Image (cartoon, rainbow, N blue to C red; front, side, top):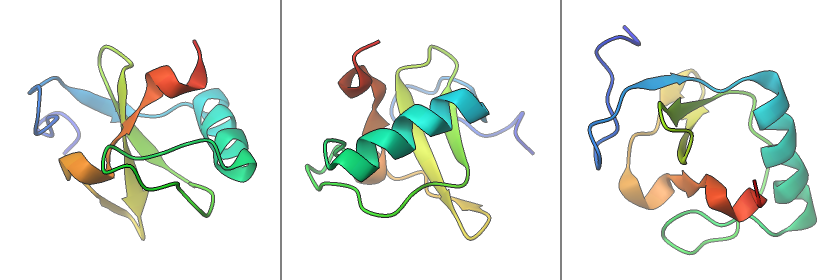
Length: 81
């Protein structure tokens, strides 16, 4: 199924986020510094997520369902590289 999923904005392919990336994302969430594209500060850690092939955008997976909404996506440049 992952092979057919695409970023709804850029149409880039999506892959499961690696554990190290999720660790960085969850650390930023815990610090209160990570926002989604809608500008909301994220609360609650992520167990899984999808990331675009270029590694720039992350989409959360909630209860096993990918949330492929632009406003819910996270620009990974916030993590500072």
